[in-house]
Length: 235
Image (cartoon, rainbow, N blue to C red; front, side):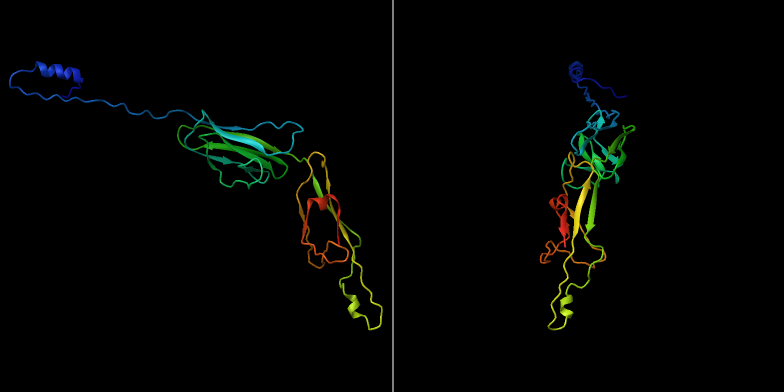
């Protein structure tokens, strides 16, 4: 049978032994095992309320745990065609990898891509976790922008070099260019004006477009915001 004794008692025992009798005293030290983390972590999503009349901006959404500091992996679900998540408050591209870490609170920014509601969810993966956190993000229409194209004529001449077919001596007749007017209508331009550009295409491509009436400056297909808001004319 083995007995565990302290070093002090071992010394006393050795001193008590006499004669030629030999004794061996084994001293052992017990080490306490590290306790396993039995903290129960819950996922948390924090979504601030948007103040009425506030300027349009991406909505900050915080993904974390309670208590804070969950060391394992986590997963976000829910972003779709209605709301997209970004790493920055402005610019950048939507995130596509929704496997995340929330050991430190993770802040992402939601931006509406279409009107409607989206439910975001956060799941902590691994032992000592419980539940799924959910939060709703609502995307509302703040400024409905409608493009407009107004034509001077519905029917125009296909061949612009008709004068080439006139006989010698006849007065040259040139077909005048016709124009279209391109603009936008906005439901709330005063608070949330449209600030982007636009593309204009012809399908099928049976017409050539120019920036000037003499048809010397070809149109490249892009309309600037200034052109849109000032009813640009193309020929």
